[in-house]
Length: 532
Picture 1: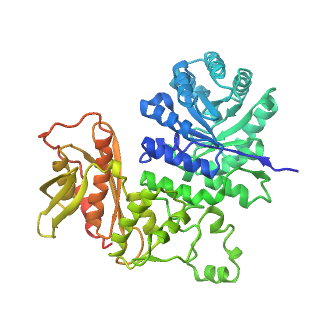
Picture 2: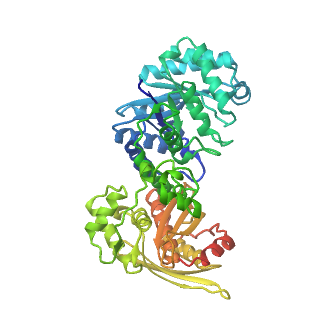
Picture 3: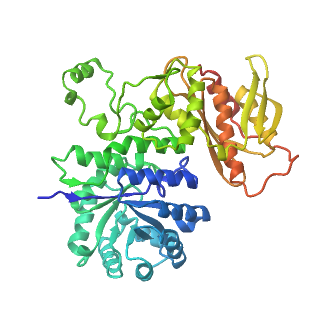
């Protein structure tokens, strides 16, 4: 008997991106979408087209870029939303419109101010209209797990009758238990006469830490599509983690006779890319993709591992794309060795990009004896393309101590011109960022600052991630260096270049810089104690 196929609907770029700290620009979304396609997801929910012009553009760009997966856009049960979704995905190889409306009495009464019958009419009209535009229509009953079962069945039957080919029954607030999910799916399967004409989908939130368990329970009850995100990111406590669902099905194939189209060897790379793009670190203890997922420190564990890996490993690191190699890079390594390492790490770079990274690699080799894989990843992700390098660092001089006010003299280059200024602050990073703000003459606030060592030992790279904002949005930058102050300056400049590159109008020369909202004590206390 052939195993049942489970379709993976990835909503990292929609629900996942709504989580605080995970916002991405258009280029980053396209890049991640291409990796999701390489990973083997079946449907990519690229965004919520009606929400903004930027979201609509990113969905459209992804729809044009993806060739082997379906591309969906979310839409409320409103004609304007459905039109926006259709315009964004219509050029995709396999487009989908994903319509939703809340169906629980709680949401109908307090959020929508709508009766059950009125909601049913709205659903019928919306699905019928979406179906007139595309053949692939999904309908979601928001807050399905708190919806009256008989009313739920009426909604599902109506949506399928009007053309929905996928029915999603989400646990929107993450309140349900695995048994409740199983019972709900079973009830719908046994009570809706036309349910065989649609695929049942699950979308479970993780507020009680049960999203993955609930998803697998839904599969056992008959759901054949699961909606999930990389690393489980999403609103509040997030969603079911795609890699956990997939590897649970694969590792426990003795219990779960299901298959997916996921190329599991791309999982680690996909998670690493998500972390790199968003600047949000993966929890070391995160299942499947955390740094500790395959680490064994206990002496008993290590002895068992030496004897037989299966004593403490239920899956291999290689199965999710964690591969260890013996290729050591250093100052005598050539561009070919670096290129080979980049390929092993999953980067598909142009010759010009490799040459640019090789230049930075050689600079790093002058500071470090041996270069690790984590150093290479940090270097690649922090190397800015020439097209976005509006401002670049020439030099900096910092004066700082525990009994003095810190000062920073920074020299920047823009085009063929050199600019220099000086500022003071309660710490060297604060002074540096104030100086940058004075030079570029564009006020910004510091929203987030993170600094940590990429690897161990005293010559480790320091990796700084900076998020700044102006009136139009939040912009992220990453910088690496064996000097943590330099890393911080480079990260700020990356963010500044993105901010100014996306600015619709330049700030006139002479505008007085606003005071930046730095959390000085916390920021400087964290920064100045780093030895990396």
